Image (cartoon, rainbow over all chains, first blue to last red; front, side, top):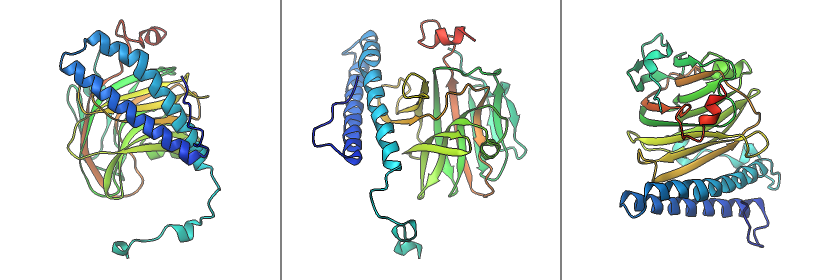
Length: 94
Length: 212
């Protein structure tokens, strides 16, 4: 499985946002299936098949892209920021 | 599926902050500045390839800046900081205070560098965990933590993942692990029902367990 990004998701930040949006959609889908299992609307075998055939491979594909984009973000030098001036105490801390 | 019994672990606990019963290892006032843990020597290279552990964890209370490990795989016997300082590698599920709140961390130490990702927890709440490694995903494998609110693991709260930096087999399993970084802050909580899922027929990791 792989993620097809929207054409305009051209930066690491945009792609990371897409990944987290997909991760949240998968979480909600998983929980909707879980609610059906608890309500007896699907069988344990159907739940297991969903986990094996849909949730696990989809989750791995999304998490693969999250780790890849996070690594790119961590190495980014795009912004001209300085640790000495960009991280400051809040009023309550002074 | 056999749940690990922490009374069978080797307990290093000079200040009596750890209490073990048949399925649960509790820690009360476990400070960040001590050397305390439960561990099993499972044999050289025992934890190789893929694995999927199940466990239930809860953070009960903390004094700021705390740090406590729930699950560790490593090749050295020491507190978490001692393992890192000795250049030892490890895979960790631990909780620490960040910005005044308790966070669960999925954590890798590799060659003296830490790699981590986290999720905000609530105190005195049970979290049902899948702690999993899949070596087929990314160059060196990926470590996952699936966090659920129910024991049947049907209601997912969050997924954490880390692309690992080395394919490494591990010998020692820890259930409760202190950090020991010279601070007096403390943690109270427990981990229970740690199930390595190694030898259950029909389990996807059964083949892996049979190779041991």
